[in-house]
Length: 512
Image 1 (tube, helix red, strand yellow):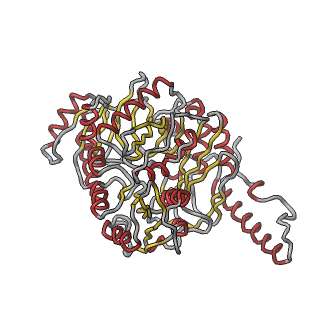
Image 2 (cartoon, rainbow, N blue to C red):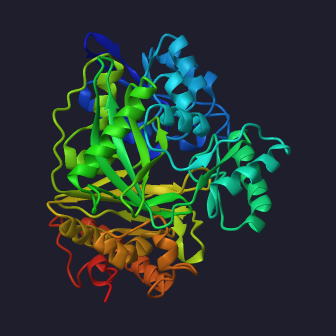
Image 3 (spheres, helix red, strand yellow):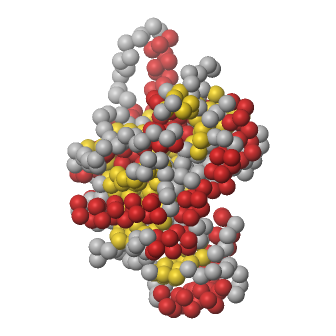
């Protein structure tokens, strides 16, 4: 396909998206709106996926595994050279927080749409990040960093644990996504937890170093979105509350925070700006904090990339964060004015997983994939009806985001949207998310990082037999589709079904 060379600030931008799925779709659409030609990279098992259809050019990678394809720096750089791409956007996950990849992109003469390799490295190592934040005056969770990851470090860790005090958290220095993290409530649990944390950290990151933080119970997880351009301007776009988590993975995110005050927002915002400035940050990033019941807040980590939950910030601020990333990378000043927060936005993550069976991933065809529609509803997804859910990648199917003038209205809109979202052919967590929207801590905004465990200590169970209901829906959907084909075959183009109403109305999920 022929493309028009896009320009920002006089710099030619042809963007290779070094990612796949939903975030690749998001970036490709933003590039198109900005007038920048695009290149997608594609593993063989992704050929024909939605994101490949949104790109101007597609390079098919060789190999079967993620390591051979989306983590293969040489193949990705070769694809950029082959297509004449001048910039690389890494999205999130995969190579997005790899300092060596950022360096390789820059050394290849390409524009890296992200922070410098130095900033990624400093914030990617959690122990170094804690030390850097202390020096910058940013409050850090009480704890200790312990050098070394060999067996000899265990005794030193035990001594540090006694000084920090129980309960505590063991965390991987190169960690993320909850990997290499263990809660320890008493000394007798320490050795086994430390061994497990080290083992998981080595498997996930190739780095067995772990450190200790005090476990702050009853806390909220609040993060601040920051932007910094190459002209010396660093700002924050307010907060997102992401307290509702399962196994340290976020499930329900919202902006603004339901218990946030203007004074606390400003204090946390300025701390986030100081954190970014401490590492000469450029681009979009997120500084994560724990907000204790006392009102104190503490630095957790900085994610040096676009976040999964960035849409809620976009909806309440009116700032297109990906577009700002493009501007900043091209050397333009960011276009954001003074921070203004309007209304309330909520995001839930729709997964192909069996919530009633320990949230095990689910596979199968998306025989029916019919998202809700209407004002204030946004869907960020990389799939469509007819696609196959496979075990090859993360099971997130979509992010459902709603906006309304108030938090109460936003919750009502999310409930309605989940009621109308029909996915058949694979098991999803839609019913779990719908239950979550009715949970008292979510309704009154008192959520903490243990809310899901507190609500369902023995695991979530559906309110009714989902398998029977889905079988009925699938049968009704098949009958409706066949009826539509028959009407089309007889020349009836009115689009008005004869007989009973749609199965998606009569068998729609309803809660008492």
